[in-house]
Length: 320
Image 1 (spheres, rainbow, N blue to C red):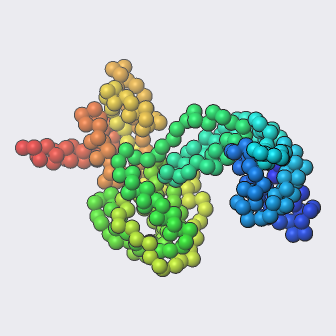
Image 2 (image 1 turned 120 degrees about the vertical axis):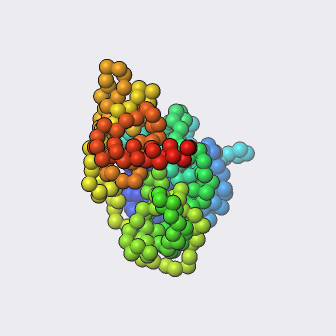
Image 3 (image 1 turned 90 degrees about the vertical axis):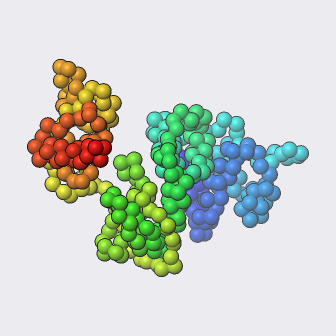
């Protein structure tokens, strides 16, 4: 909303109403939204919508006109309250680039929230006078299991806002299933995945739970009072395990993955890549390296190279 407009409407209400009627401020803002969307509305329609008298609506129209909104009334058949065609809040302190950034961010927020209404985006587009807001499309949902994850997302959102404990079956990265009862604190989006940040009563500690691994979610009637710290994500590494330098030789056939997944790499004369990465040596590392198939070779550390040999031999034994 235009800061100039916001300031003027608030000042009008404070000067003309004993207690600075916040309801009037909200009503006046919404009237502008409605008029931008519908162009002409009768005083009776607005009075019924806001549950006030038509006289109150007329006073609001006068107030909006007083702060520079080109709003006017026409009598007779087809008449009503209108706003000047092509009206744009041209007194906004935001630059065109900043307005475009806001609209693009709203697109991303809608994508993260799953199937959310873009009514806020439409309102801002109208207020900013931006017609072409469809130049970008953002969808962070996966190609599979979207409906279940969406159901969990909305159920968790409800439990966070109502401060109700939830229970669910959680599938770990090792394939283990555990029954968890948690105090849901915040929904998070990190590294292209959605997580629930919660206090887990089983572990007696705060935990991140990946939404795609949550099953059989139930909202209980148990209340809680705990709140989440903010921000959750800092510049410090999320994983506190010690890091090791891993050097890989990756075939040029996997160039697209090198470009997508690594920052530190160089190219050899034959077109292959030498990749360096610093990461913890956990159980995840072999499946990751194996995902490159024969296009990847571990150069160092030597222990990891030998471990990959052992795992590949075990895999080969499955086919003997």
